[in-house]
Image (cartoon, rainbow over all chains, first blue to last red; front, side):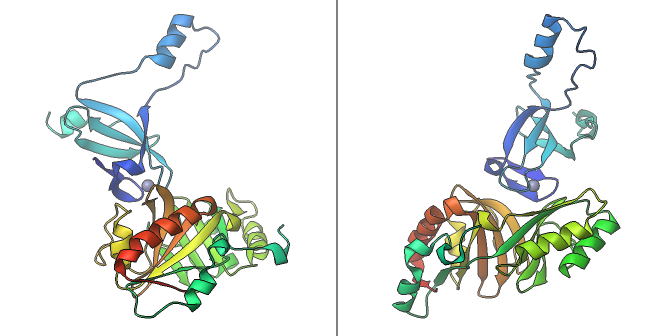
Length: 97
Length: 202
Ligand SMILES: [Zn+2]
């Protein structure tokens, strides 16, 4: 069980949250010109790193807000939790990895 | 609008009045249904002094300054739900006037007030074993050093989404739960509380 620090409510058990997949995905602004292949890439292809993953969680049983989490997919260590709209922190540098 | 003579609380079918009359004192946990309550959901920018002033003028209560806390006393309280969301409570029947006052105060602001009174049942648990009962279904640390009077938290209680609020000594907790889950949650709590000498109040 992970303990996830909600930026609003504080640390809560993982089962209070729902996972909302990879964060920081910007939709294409030139939708009319984009090819089917690029659309498929944008809609379906996601990063699956071994290491730091920047992802979204939603505090479903608490404040019901989305926020970003930088989590290590191997150790489950949570390096950073930050609000929607904020840039991804360079946690590798900060944590010396 | 439900006709007044047809209006029942969510747990009226459980016959708690009769069971309370047959009850005994000195229980480890005393359970009751808190009855009808006005609940107004408000949203706005807590950092905007105009919004804070509007809430104060319409309700007489300042927004709670900290997350997971409650401001106000008696029937009129403001419960923190999220960074821009709260519940304003009131006595039964106050909803229309309270919504009107809040919406009037919010004029020109990016803020909302919405009556959600009928969505929730409020269960009351008090007595020395209350924390032990809740601990069977809540993952929060309810130790009095961590969770005290005037604190609230939305969390999961035996698979139900609830808002827990410690309202007083005893300890005395109130649990806000969707009405459709209230029968299940009452029965679950009663089963647990049976391990700790259960009493029922009407
Ligand atoms: Zn939260």
